[in-house]
Length: 277
Figure 1 (cartoon, rainbow, N blue to C red):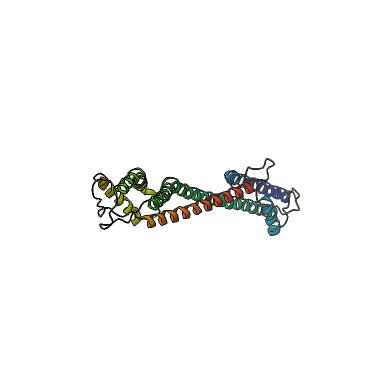
Figure 2 (figure 1 turned 90 degrees about the horizontal axis):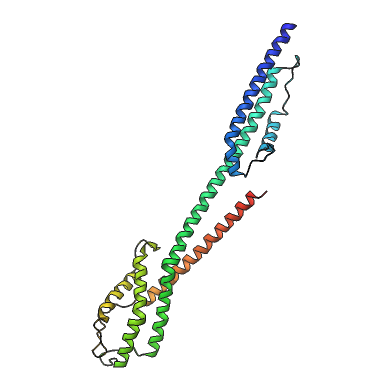
């Protein structure tokens, strides 16, 4: 009888040693998972509870039944007690770790998506502020100025109906003081900010504008109101094409900008709801 009691006591000690080792391993994995909990699900509670602990306990209880307590009674099967108490512990920590990893991955991919939205928004905002916004404004202002000028002066010049000296002076003044400064400003935007273009290749209307500016500069230097005007070498200004292109591009980029701002605001609200208790 004494031999049987001693044998069961040794079995009980071995079971307790195994239980302590399992607990130490679980605590080790818990320390590894602590940064994941703090990053994915907010700060770790001070009372020792962990995200997924209730889920782990429920799954463990449903799968393995209630956890029996170790006892030194010689009539209890110590090996069965140690085995039944170890598996729920392992299952509980496994579920907790899985919840932490899933939360961390969801937060990681959410942050990556937000960064992509921010990058797209920065690109679109720069295109609007440095290229398409100024270009569209100058093109539109140039069109209004031309409509005003053409409504006051007769521009249907020909050999049979040549312009008068007054019309030549007015045309030279408007070209040198109004239209050409605006055209040069548009050309500088196109040449200096070409990396902000939406297209892979330069649109034809922008190329024609740059060519028009170069030709007009050469012609204006030699024109005089006392001489005959020869405007055949003047490359036509792409008024309709340029206005249509800049208006369409500006509108599409502006809508894209507002859409990205809305997406970022929505993601920010979702993040605040997840952080709030």
